[in-house]
Image 1 (spheres, rainbow, N blue to C red):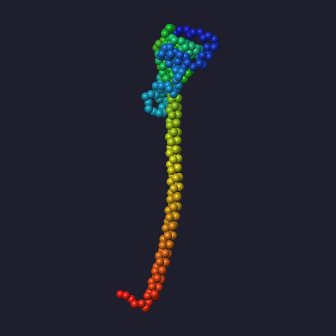
Image 2: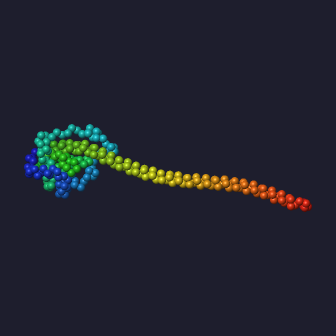
Image 3: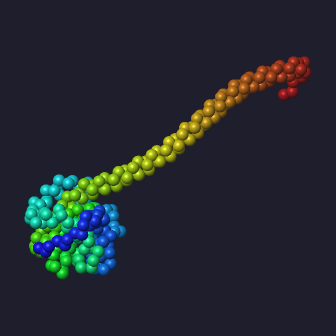
Length: 251
């Protein structure tokens, strides 16, 4: 394992606060393959490899956790390096042209990368969240680097599980809210149609009642008129008989 380059004063500690995105993006332009973390990416754009084979819209964290083997134990030297400056060292090196990205796994806004510094045959294994490197392990043991990378990749799956679940729940809620809005709009339209129908029905009922009342009045007037007609006809007949009295009848 090579000696970590000396950090120039406490000012380099500020590099930890700088997202690894910008540095790696510059490396992408020069190395063509280095892409962690990408400055133009977002959590929504990250490929969720761990969930690609399932159709369950609401995955549970339990099955994922059960499938993850025991965490790779870091050596005392690796733990010391990780705690004292590998993050800042890697962020500084990313701005150069010597790092090669060997592997990167994205899960939600979390991910793991395996980087290789060929000049010193050194591997850097990084666990990151969005724009920030979280843990960086430096080693010259290829097998060790691959094992730690696998452990970090599995850890990113675990960490992203709740985030992925939340994303799906948010989408389902938005979809349900949209269906509710559509249903409410449909209900409002139906209610408007019913209100119009009820109002029109009342107008029809009132018109029907008015027409029936008029018909009944006309019927009464008809009966009365017919009675008057018969009375007039009887009067005419009586007057005619009286007028014809004493006159010879023709056969």
